[in-house]
Structure formats: structure tokens, C-alpha cells
Amino acid sequence: MTRFLLRRFASTVVLLLVMVALVYLIFYTLPSDPAVLVCGKGCGGGQLAVIDHKLGLDQPEWVQFWHFLEGIFVGRDYSSGPDVSHCAAPCLGFSFQNDQPVLSLIGQRLPVSLSLTIGAMVIWLLIGVPAGVLSALRAGRITDRVVTAASVLAFGAPIFVSGMLLLMLFCGYLHWLSFPVYVPFTENPAEWAKNLLLPWFTLAIAQAAIYARLTRTGMLETLSEDHIRTFRAYGLRERRIVGRHALRGAITPVITISAYDFGYILVGAMLTETLFGLPGLGQLIVQSSNNVDLPVVAGLTLVAGAAIVVANTAADLLYAVVDRRVVLS
Image 1 (cartoon, rainbow, N blue to C red):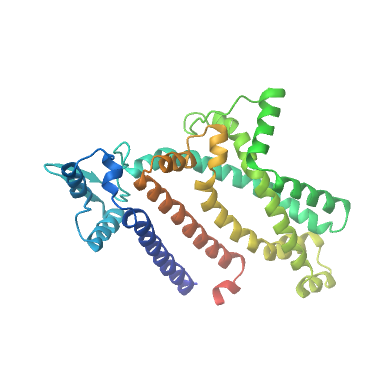
Image 2 (cartoon, one colour):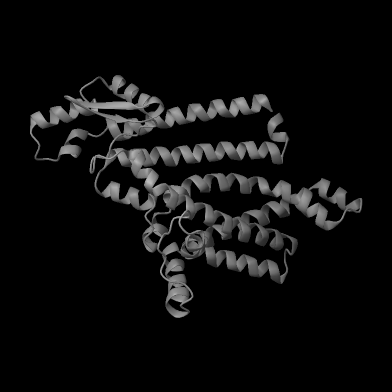
């Protein structure tokens, strides 16, 4: 187990370093002159030179990358004459548009996206996994057909369609809920959950369909294996066979896709956040892309990539808990 953990930690560090290098190459090396994006097209050569010096763009490429990497781990100072701006670690730079630290902008939006992602994930797991298990145990029967048909419909419905239907039904027709307005969890947990119910279900509907189909397939494969037939021949209760043995074997692919989906949806839920007016990372990346605010876009890319890498590492560790064969491989 110790060797397995060390291997996973080392590979995670290497992946993160490679990701940082690629992000730096794409967002800071390929653009012709980032100083023009900071100052605008009307700036003269003297102003551009000052900005180049402040951002360290007048130094060799390898020195610039070293300072960028150094800022992530220990912080960085940006100097323009007598003025020095300190960016605490992990430093992702300053926004071109408002000169605020990128990490500060991300930190303001991160609780919204985390609230949306974690809540939706809990809902789609609570719906999708039991539905898949039930469908597999009733394979070929009416229950299986109903779950399969519902999964196809849910997966085929675009987010903006399902979101609008939920808004029209619960806010417009039934008047059970008001239009969602984000309330921080620390201020009022009940209002926080109430205002996120519709966004949660909007984001969870299609994902629950995927998890239902995935769990059904895994359960059917596991239930047909020899050791399951042996357990039944020995007279073990069906509930124990399903809950303790079959579900454990079928849950492995669910862990995989859950880890990937967490990192992807954390920043990728732009449509849901836009539809419900939630000030999360999705809205921030759209606004920053429209304004060509490279440090913010680069910072969000790093956060999204790091979330996916760390989530997949956590999934591998869960594999070791669920299935000891992973450790031995």
C-alpha cells in the first residue's frame, strides 16, 4: 500500500507540473504581446515597456517560466519602479481588467461552483446508482424498461431545456419556489439549499441517467461472474450477495467517472450557472474569455486541471479500498 501511495503521489506531481508548463506555454508564450492586452491598443511604446517590466515580460522565456512556477509555490512580487505588488502563494497573477489577484477572483466564485457541483453530484448518485441496481436486478422486466426509457429521455434533454421546464413548473405554474438567488451557506443553510434545488436537479438529471446505465451494465457483468454463482450455490442471501459482493465489483467504473465529472463540472457548469444567474466559476470564465483576460483564463484552466488530476488520484486511492487487486497490480 505504501509503494502504491508513493507511486500515485509522484505521478500526480509530475502531471501537475506538466499541466502548469502547458498552461504557461498556451497563455503566456503564444500570445504576441500580453502587455497590449493589459494597456490596450492605444498605448505607446513607453507604457508598454513599463508593463513589460512589471510583468517580467522583458526577461528570457525560461526566467519568466521560473518566476511563474515560483509564484505558484512561494508567491511573487510584481515591480513597476518604486511600487511593488506582492502576490501571495499560490500566485496565479493579476487580472488584466481590474488588477485584482486571480486567486482572489476565483476564491469569490469557488463556493458557488462547489455548492452547485457537490449538491448535484449527491443527487445524481442517489438517483442513478440505485436506479441502475434496480434495473439490473429486474433485467428484462417492466421496471428495467421503465428505467431504461427514463434514462434515454433524461440523457437526451439539453440542460437549458430541462432547466427552463423546471423553472416554469416550480416557479411559474406551481409557485412552490422563487427564482433562485444564491445565498451563502454560512448565512442561511436552509435558504442556500432551497435556492439551489432547481440548479442541482437541472445539472443532475442527465448525469443520473449516465450513472444508471453505467451501474446497470456493471451489475449485470458482476452478477454473471463465477464467484456470484458460487455464493448463490452456497445459499447466501441475495441481499448480501448484491450489497456486499456484486455492488462492490460494479461500483469501480462509477468511482472513475465520478472523479472525472467532479473536476469537469466544477468549472464546466457554465450553462447552468448562466441560466440561473449563479455567480460561479462558469460565469467567470465566460466573462474573462470575452474580455481576453489571459491570467484569469489561465488560472481557471489550472484550477480545473488540478481538480481533475486530484480527483482521479482520489479515485485510484478509493480503488485500493474497494478492490485490493488494484494495489497488487
